[in-house]
Image 1 (cartoon, rainbow, N blue to C red):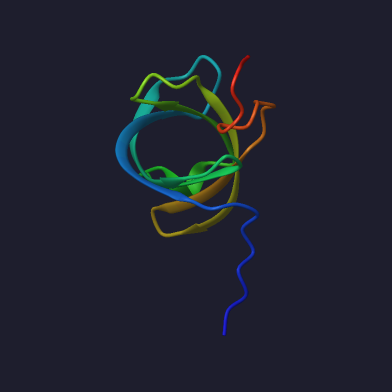
Image 2 (image 1 turned 30 degrees about the horizontal axis):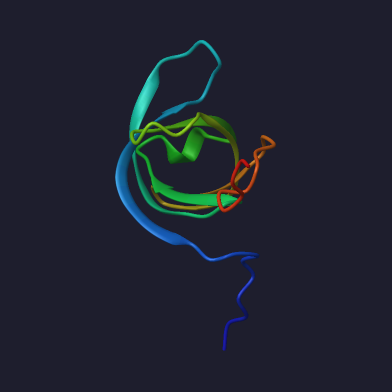
Length: 92
């Protein structure tokens, strides 16, 4: 039996987004499969060349800096490397 290694729950997302491999480089389409406060799973046709990238979600959330943790074919698992407040935290 596999042990769960995630530190938090993932939420199904299934929306298109854009990834940018270089700070001033072009953006490419990707599909975000699921997302959590700490990480993201996505499909991209440039998966084999990525190590660090910026993720731009289509729902208006801020850009997120990411680091690839694993890849299988065109599928990528990445952790967020920027410091953001948890999604469940609210401003008072």
